[in-house]
Amino acid sequence: MRTCKKVVAILSAAIMAAGVLSGCGSSAGGDAAGGAAGGENAAGGSVYYLNYKPEVDAQWQELAAAYTEETGVPVTVVTAASGTYEQTLTSEIAKTEAPTLFQVENQSWLDNWGQYCYDLKGSFIAEHSTANPLTMEGVEVASVPFAMESYGIIYNVDLLEEYCQLDNAVISSPAEIIDFASLKAVADDIQARKDELGVEGAFTSAGLDGSSNWRFTTHLANVPIYWEYTKKGITTAKSLDGTYVENYKNLIDLYFTDSTCDPALLSGKTGDDALAEFCDGMAVFYQNGTWAWTADNDMSTMNVAFLPLYTGVPEEKDTIGVCTGTGNYWCVNKNSTEEDIQATLDFLEWVISSETGVSTMSGAMAFNCPFDTFTDVELANPLFTSANEYEAAGKTPVTWIGTESLPTENWKSNLGSALIEYAQGTGDWANVEKVFTEDFATEWENR
Image (tube, rainbow, N blue to C red; front, side, top):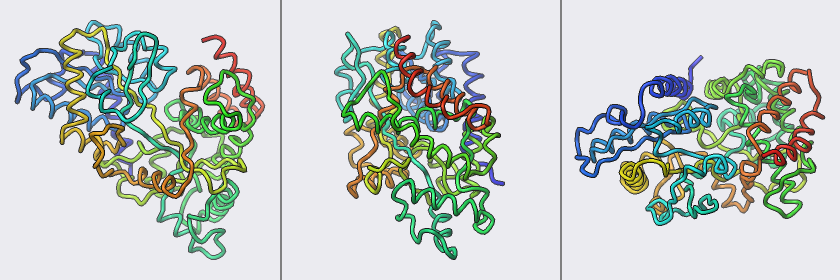
């Protein structure tokens, strides 16, 4: 079996983060960024970026080295291990040499970390942003989004088309999957004929391990919240009726039954496992987002596209696209020295405007960056192309609304636990419904 390069990259990033965090802060940036060999750092100052995304750690290290070579400004990039970002940030932000640049996912995260946010109003990244920033009382531009992303069900185009050629296949083209009913019919048939197709399941394992369950406790959980908000004509709420939780169950059940493994084993399955299964052709479908594709992982050699997250809501039929939004916002640490703040702002300007920065962000990192400096950039990531094709065909993108509406990390943890119990048969679906309704309101009350 081939091992996905991304799996190795994530493990390497985690190991490297542990080593760097134990021994240095921003003063070690010259070493981490390749040394101040080229330019001269006349203004002083350095940059320490605590990166959230392990899958692009190598590219950030290369950008840091290039910037230091060009300017002489030391840049350290430290990447937190998957699922540990806020824990790592808590530790690092308290140090004398704290990160000068960090990330938040949404408004809820900003509530926790806003006290450290420098007002980016008037900065280059704010002036050239084409997306809405996050704001807070007293800080007009607390954080600026730097990567728009989409997520849904990624599918192996070649495998699905191969299925379509089988005798008595339920569809003749992937385009015929237009709602949950058609998705389920295809997945059930693939699962029943997996030996004939040469796969181990229709879907990759739905990793419920803590390193991976965000795909279901945040991203998939967004879908029933989106439909409830849409029905009510609202954009946020601190309580849910749970009207569409049964639709959430539809897709969860499909993930569990039409899978590469027994549901009872899912508590130990990771995101790395799912990615490897998909890259190795063991499954046709894999829930994840545009970030799963990078120019140097095995998915880059595959023919891939998106399906929306169909859950059986009647209004979804041939009308919706994939979930689109952002969970990636840059924040500059206001407690850094003036020299380090300016160095960080200068670095960000270079990242989104220089040929090196723009080509790396849109190419090797495969980001869709919401800055007017990227207007004429051709995106390398085919998943962005697939997401855009739905919109071009008049389908409505599903708003990435749940990430900003989820009350706490504890709520997501409770949902993950309820899903594990359901998968193992030690708990029933009523507990999942309880998390979506009673626990949702309670967590908001206790914030």
